[in-house]
Length: 171
Image 1 (cartoon, rainbow, N blue to C red):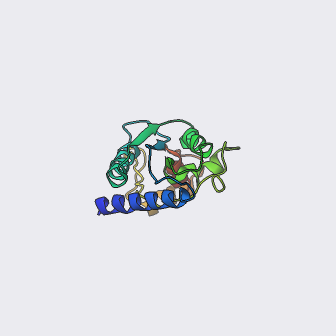
Image 2 (cartoon, rainbow, N blue to C red; image 1 turned 90 degrees about the horizontal axis):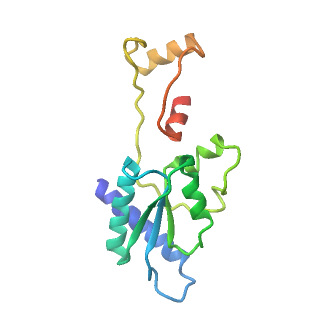
Image 3 (cartoon, rainbow, N blue to C red; image 1 turned 180 degrees about the vertical axis):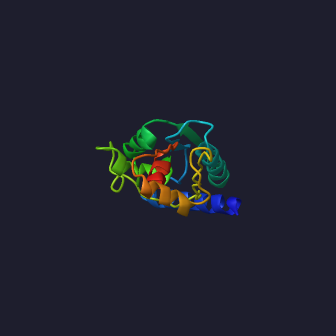
């Protein structure tokens, strides 16, 4: 199923970029494609990005170069793509946090998440699992956890590794 999803996304990305490049006289793609990712190499999303890039290379016949630009929860990469020519040769590969969560987490973004981008489609979904230390939080399910948190507001804290996790924690 994952392979089919990646193939579908690649076809969608190439289709969208073909549409964007339709006004050009030459055949698309006729040069390497840059896929910019706002997270460090080796993370889970980097692995997925490279799988998609590999499949796009095979489908397009052109190199697809993954460029990691970590920092600011993906905003550095998003800004780099926002100022790139809209010719289909620079693609942002990002989780929803760059466009959905960051507008609420940062006072001002260096790009407009609606005007500066054209969404192509989702690649994968992931779930979140709350994990607690049973020695300090004696709960066995979300209902029990919610009851304790409501009983003692402000007493407990949580940690998350990314913006999407922060939003999930708030929910």
